[in-house]
Length: 306
Image (cartoon, rainbow, N blue to C red; front, side):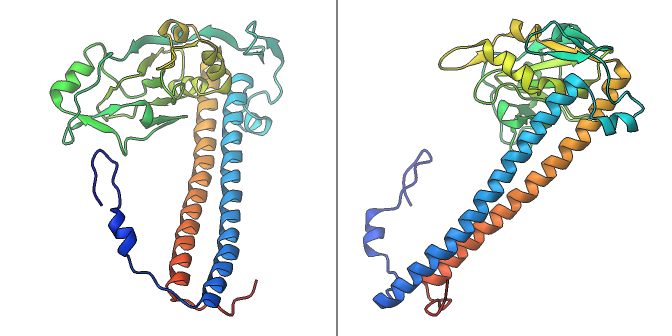
């Protein structure tokens, strides 16, 4: 392999000189027929599992959107001692629709005590830095994954938090790029700072942080933000637009119950998706191993039947 900048290439001489097994033509045909047939079976299984993943993701999105605007599903509401079929009223917001009659609606700026945009400069990263930088790549719907997060040293960290430090249960929100519109909670006891394209929300005392986070991930809020996206090369939502997002506002005790419900249900669906992804990886490994074994003669497929 040679090349730089991530563009590694195999030398042409390697392709010309590499030695490969060359079975008789009839055996080649048998191997090819076998692999066409068996890999097609694996590919069909993988496709079905990927379809199932998409359906689970759609179910997750629908559950979040419905619960933060209409309340808990009836059975969950009964278990929590809430009215399973509350009366509804017009929210007065076209894209929000009806909400339970005992709920209010409010702007995001009134559900928070601080709204902070990131420093508009690229951090100076340090591979051995002790502090994580949260980028849009680290945030998905309700999840903050620091596994592949970039790091900065103490000086850069202090520079990144000069407007406001990130505290546990603050919300981080991507407002720019392909992964805009995702929100997640900042973990307790993990010093982090904002990367580019990110915002920070400090939740007001009359709102539950997890409930507000889930509401920001609701399809209705994302669709509303999408209406006001600007910029061709770097699509983004303006800070003022985000500050004025309309949100449903249940009583605080009900927010707590809804947040706990969504934390639990989203985690279950995420676990199912991860299990299916692992199964797909194993199927793909099996496919690769099967091809290798067949074309190198490790398995005899000449007598294999469909």
